[in-house]
Image (cartoon, rainbow, N blue to C red):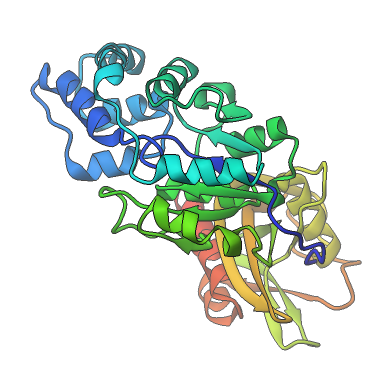
Length: 361
């Protein structure tokens, strides 16, 4: 199902680090100060991988990557001591930030911040940059259960602005953040920095070289006529076979999935859609296969669908099904047959992911 309610965007939500604040060099310096005490140095690959993470998550990542005689909590404490002390003197705004904020204020648009940073740092950073009072809502990484690329931070910011996520324009600089914004159902515009310029941003509506160019394009950006929605489905495995649905009326072979309805979790949607479309019951969710963003054209509209899939098995050990939707014919194929037969490339990606999880079980 594709929503027909397409409206202009009504709020703008900013990431902080790397987008508004030129904080990446300072963060790299602080981590290197900690690592140098134990004979290590932060390599470029590791630093790129932690961009957009909550600092607590990045501390766990670094402690797994380097043999440190520290717990993640201890590493984080050492890093924060250096980083927070340096912020007032060394943190700078990214070029073009203040004119963009002035233009948005002139349009009377509500503004928010959705950042992986913790509240203590975010308060200090906004004060240092002279941005206190410029945002009607601020959501920080320590206020949500899951950090980016999960959508939690963006959803919280939209809730605090009292604006539906699908009416928010999100500004990001890193892939993890762009994925989070898209998963929240927002239109995401990316302004990469020197660390992220060479990376991919699946699902992003546009990529701009500077905040100044975002300001120049605001009229078009705020009138985006794209449709964005979230879907969920399942890769059902039985022995060495995968369940697919043949749809003769359209000449398709696809996996079961459907639109996530209001108040319904992606897992609930996935279970419901698999049961309804295939007729399989007694399903057990074995693993969350993650998310991916799929873009396509539908009836002249640009559609961005954020998909969430789950690996499932049949609890009753029965590969038969009855009572599914009439338009679908459930069939069981080997992994290789499913990969060769599925109509849509994005769905082959889900089978690859499921196969990798099964092999690791």
